[in-house]
Image (cartoon, rainbow, N blue to C red; front, top):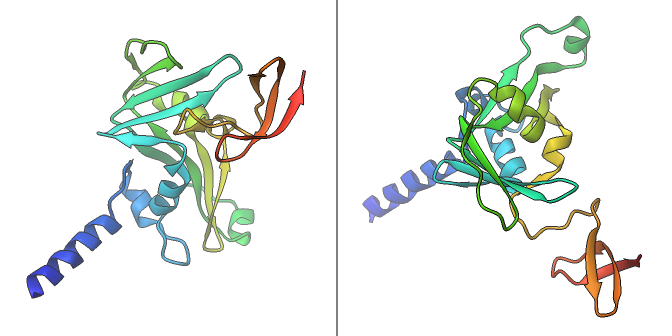
Length: 195
């Protein structure tokens, strides 16, 4: 019985510190005033936006023309930290601040229903390439984490069957065409605006 109890404790401990995304050690060490690490907070923030399978990240990016699916090989969460803080930062209770993003060494894309492109390298300019797509400005102020998302991260999600409230989608309903302005979770139209 005691072996089973020890096994349960070990599994619980491992699962408590297991993440789908690979995090830099710094992100596993910085905690808010409640003891929640920056990595735990980011895991929740990226949870609905990025799907991770076998060390590869997948997400959909909304564009005007079509949804583009990204596959990133060896994906991880990287960061930069501001090293110098002003007197105003210290007076405002800012303890840590910087930039966080999801990146990888190689990636490929495809439009919905099309074939995957060839793999492309993003090793040389990874931060510049990925920050605008998957990034957050972050800071720890008075013991709390605060995030400001890039416009790119607002346009990504982990699933293709998603309609943004900010993005209308064309529909054909029998004879009448229109735009879906809002949908319920079941996909039934709540508000339909005719065009």
